[in-house]
Image (cartoon, rainbow, N blue to C red; front, side, top):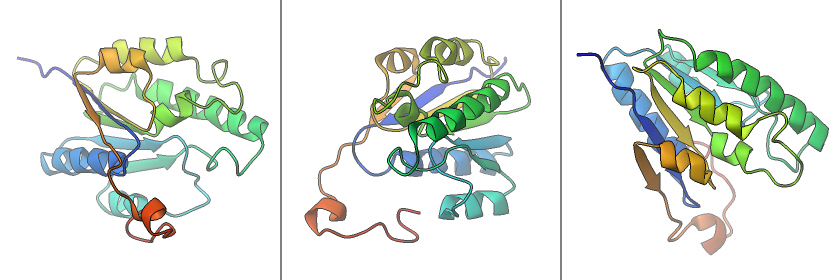
Length: 179
C-alpha cells in the first residue's frame, strides 16, 4: 500500500514552529527518507544553526528570503518571494522527495506591509499543495497560517507564547537558541 503524504502545519505566536519542523526532519532522516528544507524569510547572506546541522546531515537546505520585511525595500522582498515561489513550485512536484519543509511560508503569505499575492499567489500555493505527489509529506511553518492552508492540513499545531525572554526580560536573540 502506498504511503499517504501528510500536510503538517505549525503556526502561532510562540517559539518552536521551526524547531518542530526540524524534529520531523530528524525523524525522517533517521528513517532514510529524502528531506528538503526551504526557508522563505531567512537570507542566504546569514548563517543559521539549523542550516549548518542539516547540511551536515545531507539535507538540501535553501534560504530563499532576504530577511525581515523591515530590513529591505518592498520591491526587494517581492522579487525574493517571486523567485522563492518559482523554486518551491518545482520542488512541490518532485516525486523523489519524501518530506518537504516550507519554513516560514505562512509568514510570507501573511505579509501586509506590501502586496504579495501577485508574486506568491495563494491560489497557486493551494493548488500546488493539493497536487503534490501523493506520498510527499509537507511541513509548513510560520505565524498567521491562512485559513485555507489550515483547512487542507492533516495536522495543525498552534504554538502559543505563554512566556518568552524577549518580552519578559528584554533579551536579544541568542546563538544556538534562535539562530
